[in-house]
Picture 1: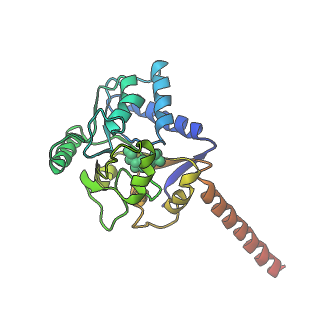
Picture 2: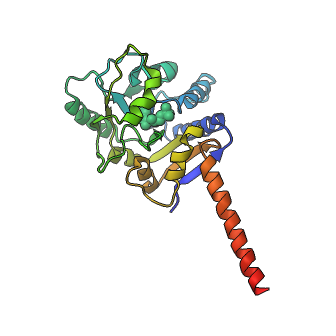
Picture 3: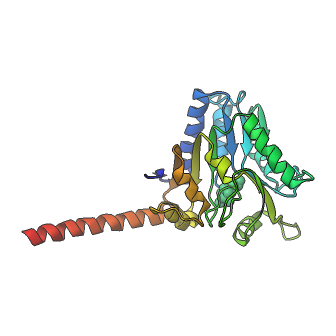
Length: 264
Ligand code: F6R
């Protein structure tokens, strides 16, 4: 059983391929329920979706969306909130009927997690889930751990994620160290999953994801168990995978040559 993947030359190619999945999804089901991600990786995809929408080739009017995660606590209008990010990059630019994110302003984080799960379930679950991947293999803010939550949960971020996200916060801003994230169970219940992995910085974790193993400390490995998941990588992120497979091929050819040589 292999996790399906497509390796494309550039980041732009990955964004276009991912956008094609949305085009197809909306053709098949105009009232699709999406789950979006934030971070640097999907920005080019969102630009492509906006372009297609503006060109009249995409209509989100019957679709609605959720998001994977949100810092906690954080105001919706804080420039670093995921709510703000999504409005700036996508929601204010397309005609989506409704969007929801975990509420970083809720007074009770645990109650907000339960409310968010109910909202997702009332919407009929997620049709198409978009995932990025952290350098440590996290998906959403499900950080490497011994056990993983099923539903939305209130989590502490790891040093690795805090450091990775510190690039977005100025020195005088207090960076949140906690977040609300959709759980692994909810992610896995999505009907389809697409994951985007781009840039050389993700080469190592991409290699780990495609090893023929389930690493319990790489939450993204759960996606390997999903029946309808696909990963789009650019060449930079696939660097180690391509080197590994090239070496494997050479070894096989050498082994066959040695064997036939022995017989000759
Ligand atoms: C954000 C999220 C995270 C990111 C991951 C990669 O909503 O779910 O898991 O996908 O941290 O972030 P970038 O794309 O910035 O490398």
